[in-house]
Length: 303
View: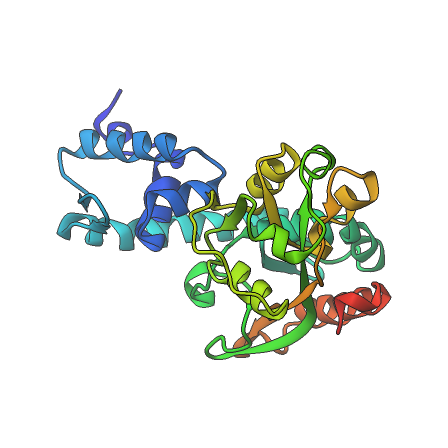
């Protein structure tokens, strides 16, 4: 192997490095890349062994770029961006262009993706390129045109168009319900509760809505929606989940509503468009189409 090739890391290692550098977390990077934390860590170790330099400073609670890592991160970010742009340019329709869209993993796969064939049929000249993002990011740096965001409408230098508000409800598996005496919301407070790490106060808000004090005991915590839904279906406890994202499980009887009123979340789903992309034709076409799809949904999605 010549020297030039020996200096080029594989793209998987570069993608792992860029994600950890940007997110400041091996766990968050693994979630974004759909890898295990161990796999991400191994990719970083390979880079550090290849260069003979530490790219990150680690302690028991934090990970941050070393001085060498900061320099390398800027170069890697730029190089990956150029490769991504080149690939998109090759794949995109030359006559109308592309829409580079950031989506939330679960919302994207469970709600949006089944609808996308309709957009493709209506706009065959627009190519959508999807990227998964779970938090805020720099549109210019990431080279993305729009994002579907869950949270508050306060993204800097961007327009936030409300898509739908979110209703959460307590749910259990049929087996769990059959093996417990659950007649009221008060009974739920004495049961194992499953928590989403990204929504640490959700259960407290729900119990407050029911006129009850929230339990103070510990409960299992999960980083991803899919994992907490699976844990709930396995009978590990009661989960507080968005109604829109478990419609299939409810229809199939894999999950059942537990006693208590659903609660409208304080946050909502938004289409976020940076100010400099307002006039981008694919963005405008997608926005109009998406709002039309929202209007077709059941009423609980938009109140």
